[in-house]
Length: 166
Image 1 (cartoon, one colour):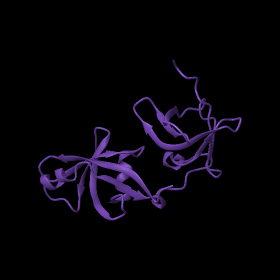
Image 2: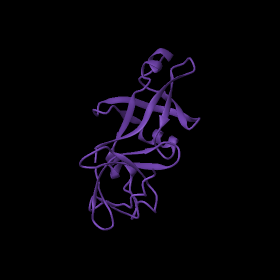
Image 3: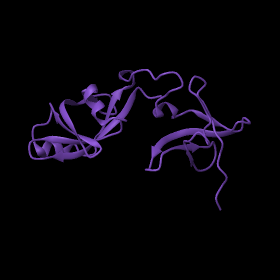
C-alpha cells in the first residue's frame, strides 16, 4: 500500500486567467477541495487549491501557485496525490480500491492465481489486473460473482476466474 494516493490529473488550462482543469479520480470530484494541498508522486508540494467548481466530471480550480493560462497549460498531465492518512478510515467491510493493489489472489480452493497489479475502470466497471507468477497478466471483472471475498487484513482476495472465451 502506497503512502500517497492518486486523486487527480491536470487536464490543462481553463479560460485566460490561469484556472486549471482537473480530472478527478475521487468518487466526488468536489472532495479534492477538502484536501487543498495536492502533491507530486515524490511527495513534494505542488498545487494549493483555493477554490473550484464542477466541470464535466472534473473540476475547474484556482490554484495559489498559478497566475496565467500559460502556467496552467504547462502543468498538463501532472498527476496529483494526497497522503493516504488524509482519507477517512473505511467502514467495516469497506476498503479503497487502491488497497487491493498487491493483494494475493486465490481461488476458493486455494489455488494461487497471482497478485493484483492494478485496478482500472475502462467504462464498464472496475477491473483487477492479475499478475501471475509466470506469464502475462489478465483482467478480472471486480464483481460479486468473480470476487466473492476480499480480506484486507489477510492481504487476500478470493476470486473465481471466468471461463476463457475462445
